[in-house]
Length: 478
Image 1 (tube, rainbow, N blue to C red):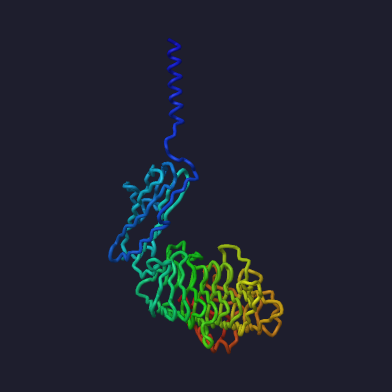
Image 2 (spheres, rainbow, N blue to C red):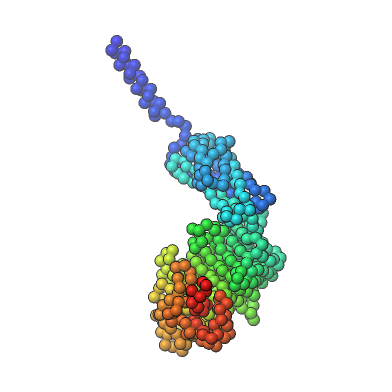
């Protein structure tokens, strides 16, 4: 009897071990990755007419065994604007979704927004998160939360082509997704108060003989920024690409604009006209760029009342020679997202061609008048000049942070390595405070050519250095 009981126990234990070791048929390799028909879903419907929209994508198992997705979740949880259906099952989190070997399933996603609710962000962003054997992947979701003009790639292309003279106004925001390209000999005019928003990595590009005309005002400047309007993104650099004025584009004019939170503010490439500047820019702020504020290559730029602030590499990068005239400019580089080891102003006159030969590109004109160049670094101005060549330049009545020899004739009445005492550099407020050495130190002849500062204040009676004339902060707030 005892032998029978023992044999039974042994059999039970063997069966238990057998079932515990049994292969359940799912591939449990933590390196397993799913494949998706899209890495992001764009809900680009104008919601004033529809209110909601549905999109779908497929999830693929490209392996030779079944896969169990442990969970599929909306990152935004129950508060998300999105709803999903995974292979016929709905919810914010769905557990244990199986896909057979070399098979697929559909995920349907719906978003519903109230387009007249102006408290919504311009874009509503979420993601669907897939957890498979502790390997996490996601598909991005992007919807427009407010009514806007949407500039998205033409069908079958990676860009949208603006083929005829076009005007953008202040009626609704413009949202650029991907590349917006202004065609040859076409002019894009942007009027006061217009709001231009760029999705991640989006850029505005101008082709041969095309032109940009920005005509903002002190009260209603034109703004260029990213499409994330939540507080966290208000001063976050690198949210979009650049405004690219390509080689042989011409006659660009920017007046009263704010360009912020991108990678490169303005990229100006060579001259498009032998008689007129490639770019005239006035009364404009470029700030918070992850790379460069103004990048110019062998170009012709004239600037007045320009402020460039807080850029990750250079505020101003002038490469391959050219012609540049900067008057009443404030360059203030206190970038704090990362350590900046590069100068605010970089000036270069050569390049190496595809055969490895040095090609020198001269500067026809290089003038800085009544200009501030200051920042965190001990040296904020670097000349990269090829051996055996020279560059004629003038800093006339400028306040500079530099170790250069400012005792030469290239420097007229300089103020060197004295803090300009900005009102609040961390908050991008580069107005002068009452003890600033820049007050009253400008060249009056230059000031009379540009009688009003970036904010429209008269500077002719007491010309200060920089784009902003000193006034009592309390007086302005009153």
